[in-house]
Length: 56
Image (cartoon, rainbow, N blue to C red):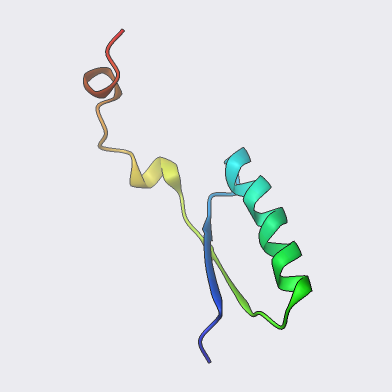
């Protein structure tokens, strides 16, 4: 069975935590199923050169 909401989150990201609170509220208001999916932003962004992307 497919979920109504696929929520990808990094547990150390404060924005993901705040959004997960909203997702839980939405889920409680209806008969929604949530697929909670863990991701690691550190791993996803491991190759990003932040000095080149965000110069001083």
